[in-house]
Amino acid sequence: MATKKTVEKEKTEKEPAKTKVAERYFYAIGRRKTSVAKIKLFPSKEENNSIEVNEKKVEDYFPIERLWVIAASPLELMGDAKFRVVVKVSGSGVSAQADAVRLGISRALVVFDETLKKTFKDKGYLTRDPREVERKKPGLKKARKAPQWAKR
Image (cartoon, one colour):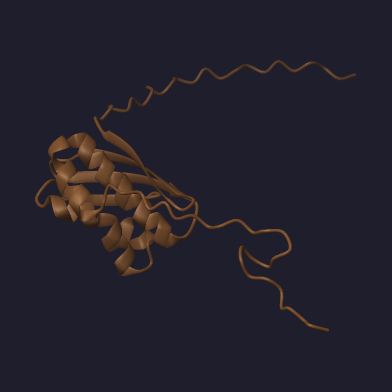
């Protein structure tokens, strides 16, 4: 005959809850093709313009130097201002993601300081590139490419 076992719940001392200090940040979204970049811009005193894309350094996330230069260009234009940028980016390819990050950082910097709007507007950093992939049509191989025509 089986006996009932009484299991005493161990009374563990609860660890003090980790409280996150809410840092003030400026938020913006950048888009390009199907890529979406969500930007959090933290004013920083000790760091000098660090960009973290999907929990990696910008140099590690974007494989080509040209792409991370594109992504960091709004901060380079700012000069000596110090920011820590946290980016969550998804969709599309790395080139479109770099453009989305640039647009998002530019928008976040404009939220931070409205006087930068004219500078970024003149450089073209605040303009969303509206080009998207054209849809495939029925009867065609791609959006416009038709099958080879045969007379006989």
